[in-house]
Image: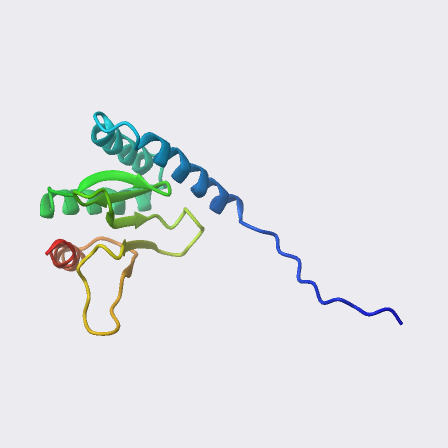
Length: 149
């Protein structure tokens, strides 16, 4: 009897993952232009938000207003095709992932390692967003303030 090899076939990255990587590559190429980069970053962010489904777009718009009002020193840009906000060093601190990006049941507000959310040996760096409310806005403001502190 011939020996059977247990090879697991991988389908690789999904179409959405490949698209996100292509978007990130384009973003990295564009970052070579320092002068118009920030203005272009804001426009790219707004364009991405405009392309979202209505519920995701409403959340992304509220996140954008809240982040820019709370932390005007962060620079709007896109990151892997998602709305994001970077510090003075160009490192992403906060990002918004709409539920439609990878067909999730909720949108996500995420924080990168440059965010100052450290709390002991374990802390959350991602939050599910289903709908906007005064309580949600208050929590997002608190998180943004902590992230940039």
